[in-house]
Structure formats: structure tokens, C-alpha cells
Image: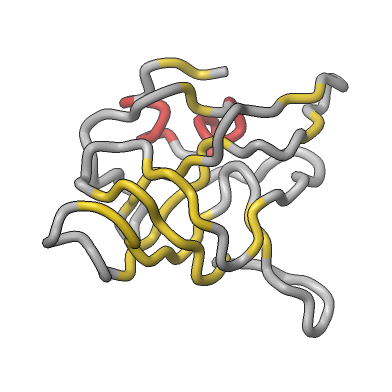
Length: 132
């Protein structure tokens, strides 16, 4: 996992329900917490593109529902600035379920993946259909 250049705008607070963009069987997941989040005391943790979060599966197949898993955020609606000055945002919030070592559990990703997430997670970049 590589570090991101600059500061990311975090647009997904704890408790946000987001789409699952892979074929693991999960459809909607809820963010429980953000891993490696350092902030001010009593501030609610929030996640941005490329962050690892702990999620609970809210909708999906019966064997994946109510499971607690790790996921990586690949898209967010909240605009964020890239180092070259361009502002980027997507039309939905999405995540991909991963293992504790960073390997993807699914074999394909639906929709585009942010360049920041693809650079940070090479396994996500390998199965992404398009990188924006």
C-alpha cells in the first residue's frame, strides 16, 4: 500500500451506506470505522478514496449479510482535488471488499475506479475495468 500525495478530502463519515462494486455477493455496506485514522479528539472518523474501512454488509446474499469485513473506497461523490489542480467526483459512493492483506475477494469491479485507489492498491488496479 502506497501513501497518497497531499491531503484527501474525506467525504464518507462513519455510518454511511455505500454500494459494493465487486462480485462478492454484497450489495450495500455500512462503514463501521476507518482504519489508520488519526484526528482530533471526539471527531467522527470519515473515509476518502483509497482508505481502508471496516464495513458491515447490509444487503446482499444470505451468506454475506451481517458479516463484518474490510473494504477499500474506490469512488466518492464529494469532490476532491488532485495534485495537478483538477477537481474530481463520481456519481456514486462505492467500495470493494478486501482481505486483511489487501487482496480483493471479488474477481471483477463494476464501474470506474479512482486513480488514487488504483495507485495505492495494485490488486484493485489489476481487476479494474477502467481507471479515472
